Image (cartoon, rainbow over all chains, first blue to last red; front, side):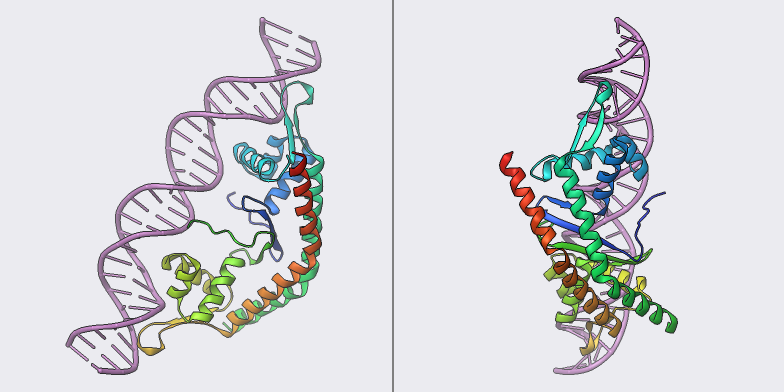
Length: 123
Length: 123
DNA sequence: AATCGATATTTCCATTCGGACATATCGAGG
DNA sequence: CCTCGATATGTCCGAATGGAAATATCGATT
């Protein structure tokens, strides 16, 4: 399993908020999995990526935005990771944008697919 | 000049049409510059990328879609490159999708920017 | 003090990516 | 037949990417 490039027929939306920060589908999925599992390592496993990579992304997400989006603590029974209030809001908004985009371009995506099919048929 | 990652505050939209083909802002810009200049090398120069990379992208664009999107010929006075009919349609549709997306998520982008500003202010 | 589970961090290494550069190729026109 | 401009293609090499694995750290529980 190398690059399970997802969402065929769909759109990858990346929102660039500053010169050093953006949020895209991968980072959003990671945030969501962290929220679900309460663990960076478990989220990484489910994403099929190494812990190192996931941890690096967490760093970027925390330092790139004005405030931390993910909170992690080690030791004790409070160990694990979760989204901050800002993190939850960013994720929620991003999901909203994804959905809005999907609706806005649905016709065009379909048209492109049809065009591709036509051209392939003619060969 | 390394990575002049553009469109701050805007969105990068990538449309995945098949497992091996997508079109995103960079490829669209390249196609547009090829159409404008009639030359792969000139388009590459204006994009700030090497001819090799631009040529590779042209290959991908021509082989990934069902039909060639770019037509190039060498020698004589007909030398140069231009978009095929399919290429023009793909580009036009992609631009339309970009615009539709921009409109659809404008409010959210603004809200995210505001949130970021607020959080940064509090520090 | 020892254990446990998850985060944090480093080292090592294979692979990929892409730039720079050198050629090769083509076809019209001089 | 030689030049010109642009496409087409290969080679070489440094940088960046990212995985694997080992190790360190933390804090509550036992």
